Image (cartoon, rainbow, N blue to C red):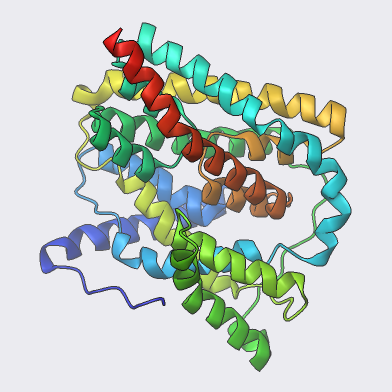
Length: 355
């Protein structure tokens, strides 16, 4: 079950306060300039810039056990019965995910090996579109350069969110979109409130029992999706809770760059930036094919193939009024495929190293 996070050590309080304070400022700025997903992008960007400048921010990871299930419920609330009307359009784009993984990983692997000069394990783990934590853990186990792997994946999330958000702004949005109303806690019925609280509370436990890789997020997402699909509730998560969770996680993503010197890491960051743009190019091409063949919205397909994380891309889908359900399902399928094939790929790489 969800447990309250432990209080942080005193020496970390200043870092946490700085990250969250900058997150608030970044969120306000992003709202003012009309950024999509302002309470995630604003905190992420401002914390990234100042972390690289040497400000001692510390990601508020002690709040993640609360923030992740809340966002899981937010994303799960998009799984309403109406989504079944779009299943026909989903089939081909989802079936093409293995092709995307193969092309994106191969192109980036060749880049990291031949241009960046990385060893095979580091190049592979920096290339695959998997989760940051999982790739770092695999890197530690198999002898990869975990610092480079972390930088590559952190840059990929940062660049993916920013580039797609800029494309959306440049494009003028994705057409007329309904105005999202603010939902207050007092707007929920007693039943709705109990159901959403149970999803947040029990989600991590369910995710653990089912051995989900990101149990805090996916467990709550599963329970919320089931509750909304079967009609127990149609209520969205109260807006303040959703924005607060985005603030926490956006600040955490930006604070990953704390302690990274631009001078010492400039080359690695440049490699990560280039790799991210290459991955986005592959995603853009795959999305164009999916749009022309299956008739799916281009931005929806792009977010499904984008190299950023499931949480970030699904939140961006929510912000620009695309199908959160499709984007979430696409990233879950991609994640599972990557993790199930990673071990086999490692054995192949090791065999080639010994040859």
